[in-house]
Image 1 (spheres, rainbow, N blue to C red):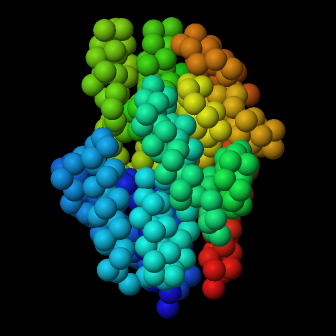
Image 2 (cartoon, rainbow, N blue to C red; image 1 turned 180 degrees about the vertical axis):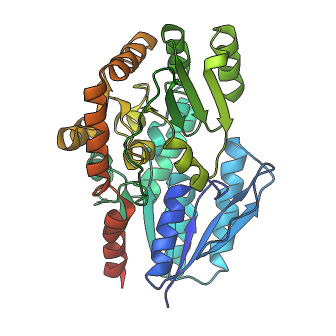
Image 3 (tube, rainbow, N blue to C red; image 1 turned 120 degrees about the vertical axis):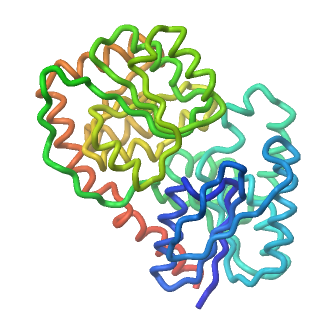
Amino acid sequence: MKRIICTVSNDLTYDQRMIRICTSLASAGYEVQLVGRELPSSRPIALQSFAQKRLRLLFKSGKFFYLELNLRLFFFLLFSRFDIVYSVDLDTLLPGRAVAALRRKTCVFDAHEYFTEVPELSDRPFTKKVWEMAARLAVPGLRYAITVCDSLANVFHKRYGVHFAVVRNVPLVRQVDALRVRKPDASFILIYQGALNDGRGLEESILAMKMLEGVELWICGEGDLSDKLRDLALKSGVAPQVKFLGKIRPAELAGLTSLADLGLNLLKNKGLNYYYSLANKAFDYIQAGLPSINMAFPEYLRLNQEFDVFYLIEELEPRQIAEAVALLRSDKIRYENMAIRCREAAKTLNWQVESKKLLELFQKIG
């Protein structure tokens, strides 16, 4: 039985993509271990069909965190038994590539994002150059690589000369109840799920609430902007309309999403990582039978041409968001047709279908 060690830089609990990937690999007969890090706020690890391990690190963020993480992963892998190291994102690729080369094992790189183009690096040119150097060292020459959408696969191929297989970040199939019959006086619920970080359209969404009556915004997640966003809701006078629900486990989040009326997946055009993104939340909304508002970026345009499940906006600003919400709330026929198309799209855009691509790649490794 081949042994796979998967490495990430998070604390495992909320990483839905890696939980799905590791479960699929374990079900296919591989011995799988997922390795991340422990945080002071980490919840107990949930029992899965694969092994899990958290590394306790001295540093929690910044350059010393990444240096410590890479060193700890290097020595962990060096003295661990494995046939394949599955390195997720650039921040864990260097130790995976190095140890795999030393021990003549296989390294699989999974680029969940365009790491050197994330908004957090846009105003930090030196740090960005360091990560670009790391990418030039570690990515070229890889035999097996994966990413989440065609746009990123094309960019990476041009930049590094490596073929990237596309395995989209889609959820498991779940049963969707019949279309909701809304009471006339019920609040229209918007939902955002994910990290509360820069460039996610959260400030704009909160300000849009000033133009919307009878509408609630549920924000599921925490992040760098948690305190700032709560303060903005208070100062803008929309705190009663905005519910900060904190971090929610994936199994609970799916049920919560199904109670909402409209999903939000809004990104600022701040770096190519966002411009070429295809976020998992867009698929989570589809699986819940939920129409959503997204940016008119390449991957969402392409997906919408096929399935017509999104309302796309050109500019990330409060008035456009409010107008989109008001339109979908008032045009019940359009909204219900979008919800029906979400149900149809969910039959294709799910992990049971998409995981076949992942398993085909690992079968090639042998």
